[in-house]
Image (cartoon, rainbow, N blue to C red; front, side, top):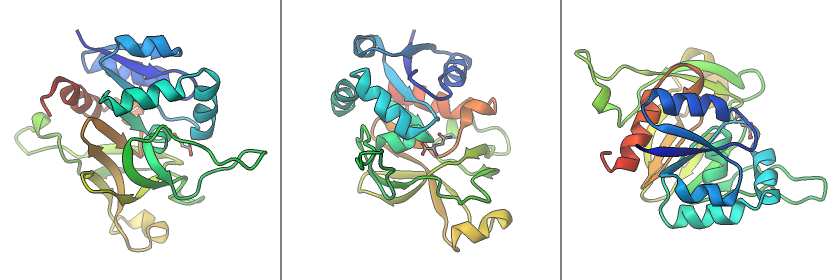
Length: 219
Ligand code: GLN
């Protein structure tokens, strides 16, 4: 069967391993470069992107991971994982020496961290999500109940990046921080998938199922 690695340096990697298994694949925690060699895909979990960045360099995973992404390894990043897949961060954090945080990159997007603002940095909403047609019932595709925990949004998408979901400015509780604009919260480019929110914490299996279909070449 399919083996999906989950980067297990920091963050909610256990929840992703459970979600992968609920979606019918084997989930494997990844802490060493060699462990990247026998997985069919990788998930970068939510957590703190600056911490995962630092630990990945200390554990010498950052460069092998960049290489595997460039070679076409399917990767799904949620929240901090989306930030780590982004080619550019609008507002990168700097460490005590003034060095900006780094990303693995590969996904031609610009993200803004903690984008939904202090008041609303954690919230839940229902989203229309493209690409889940395989799950359609009689009434069509059910919306994805999305939990945002200090999540980023996507401010720029490059050519070839498909927008899968946006938070709508009509959504009453978020008009202030959205400034009247729909904000992109899920994207796909080739074998890379990223969401600003955390499907792994709600029992939502379809985003992980979509990722599994991408790995299998079915989506
Ligand atoms: N704000 C965090 C960061 O910048 C992401 C939060 C999350 O993954 N839940 O890394």
